[in-house]
Image 1 (tube, helix red, strand yellow):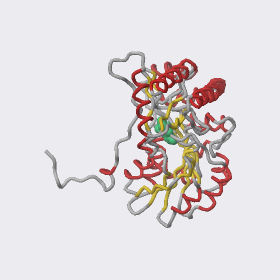
Image 2 (cartoon, protein in one colour):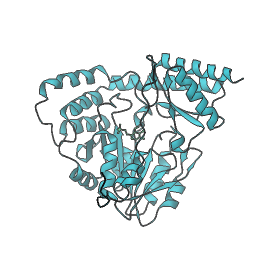
Image 3 (cartoon, helix red, strand yellow):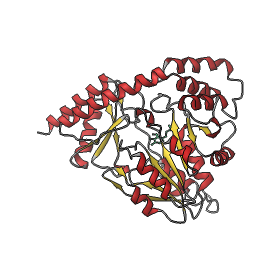
Image 4 (cartoon, helix red, strand yellow):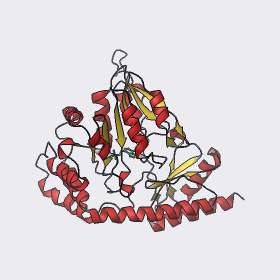
Length: 363
Ligand SMILES: Cc1ncc(COP(=O)(O)O)c(C=O)c1O
């Protein structure tokens, strides 16, 4: 039974459900999942120990202000703890931003190959998503500025981008922040910032300006995607607003304590970053030798470019027969590409071997 009088808020029915990375293949036991940009090594030992310890405290309500985690993040990154907000993944920070700053009649800009949650959260808030072109899979600041008007409330950029893996330089980002209309907030999504040695994700720009917010996550380099922890950093008044829409118990003590241990474990961060960089180059070179180019990736995946959509899909089908799951990205307007997460050395070798087999089968 369905009532015709009961209707959701405008925009909600336009939302196409988020497609997560596939994780199983019928009849295959030795599956290699390279479809969600997860850390192949999982979380570090200190994070796992903190997680296990919390089992004794599950009857206690968690902290509502996340002070210990915010302080840990602030110490490690040299930030102001009062201007950090934590959420259930950076997805939740994106949701808070849309909910608090965009509504019916407002526009939210995302780029051509931008992460799909920007559009979903915009529609959920009743606002209008506006897509602007990228230039050869790189965010184009001039195209964003051309897409702005008096209705623009938020501009989302992932840097490095997903699924492109490319980056925009800090001068260009600063120019964008400078030239945005006065009512618009620039959101720098740093989900993959940890993979770029020495990159602050835009934190310094946040400190310099009143219209920039940075989002970060524990889901990628920290290997905690399953636990759902992210954070945002911004001007005091914006963080204040976001805290008003945040549920008081949006993070459990399990999430908070595990993330705190993870962020303090710098040795593990360095190890994972270095290993990702090593295998990323290896995999990109191996694919290039097989005639499959990719842009230089700054993240933990490679966007492999095939000659056309048919070849990309055929390769994906072949990889599945070998138990390897990668990500099709036609939904991101990249039909001739496959996004392949950089795994550990054995996984990368397995991918290269399987792709070589695919290429041989076509000559
Ligand atoms: C660019 C980008 N931003 C944000 C997220 C959200 O990550 P999480 O909600 O797990 O922090 C992802 C996850 O894939 C991403 O790729």
